[in-house]
Image (cartoon, rainbow, N blue to C red):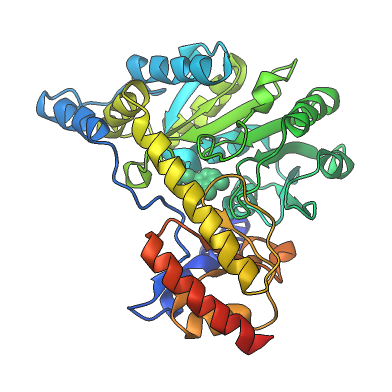
Length: 373
Ligand SMILES: Cc1ncc(COP(=O)(O)O)c(C=O)c1O
């Protein structure tokens, strides 16, 4: 009988799903990784018009429509003053596919990929799928990734390191100084920096900066998406930006695995990127208010929690048995070890949930915390 491939046997379905399954029907779900806002109407309309006119019926160019790639290029100019050639962009099926392309195109069997632990679950899994060796590294006390830790972890075998700011599951935002260091490390050690920027617009203090702004070589590729910024997780539209030679390699994986991103989603994304951005501003303001609410609630319950400066997650340190106690009382949170071994003793709370529900959940958390302390 044909056996399964080792690289697939090393990957399991994310532990997050198990938590959801254990929760009752009426549970308040603080486990979700997607904004609780509608996709902007003008983005939906972009897809509807493309469908009705027949424009979305056929394959697009493998990299995505010229208009979408121009819109992505204009976004990098607007946000970071970066000149990105539309030819150096691939529209992908979400940020997830973009991460997959970056790893598949750059990691040889056995080569190491350094990434944050706790960190987004895909980094470990996609490294295995690319036949690489995961090298998770711990975070600072404030849950940011120290460039020195990354530099120490780099060996002759390192193919890439992943930076994720604002971060899932911590909500931490890397400083400009850190981003400059990541760019320097990529340049000096000649390793690829994969910068996962899917939460780039959800920042409460200061601004998101990208290592792409500071690198002197082409050793940075950037992954982003419409998913979080425009509340478009279901549309599956992201992208990867890199130098032409890197895009050309990633395109080989994309062309045979995907052909092109879904055409209706491409038209929706173009409309989202070129249309009014006020809904993004409003969403970020709402997240900031909820962040403050959650921070106060957790601190009042006696938990220690670094102030998250972006995304829509908080990651408090929690006593043993806390996650089960909270879940038993009807609030879904994700145990920190679902994001890596160093996540043990933490929990991830998403505040992509209505304010009233959040208040109710925080009261339950307060009681649960007293019960286990
Ligand atoms: C850090 C991070 N990167 C990438 C992704 C994937 O995003 P997408 O839904 O665009 O595939 C997520 C989704 O949760 C994420 O949290």
